[in-house]
Image (cartoon, rainbow, N blue to C red):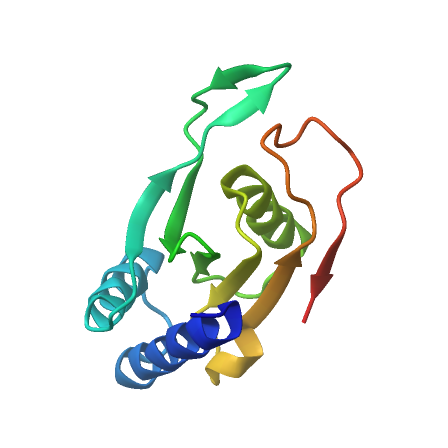
Length: 141
């Protein structure tokens, strides 16, 4: 399954959750409901996946956790905030680099229409020595 097919399924599930719950709830509520919806699909989903940091060839367990990693290709970061800002994008990009996934979805459920709170990020940086190089390139769609 391609990243585009995976993200299409994820976004459909997120829209369903948002239509049922609306905005204004805690991030944890959206996370649990989205996990339930995603678990109804045939996708492989890892919830709260630990992401180690590699620093000078040393593997460090720093407590980074992606909300979801789907099919080892797509990272999902969930928010319930007034508005997304650069730090949320940076966090999702970091998770993309640490997981070596190619696509990230940053989803803010605290909006009137979910498409207003959705960012798709593409990681063009592939390396097992994550974060050891500053030549990171990405695209936000």
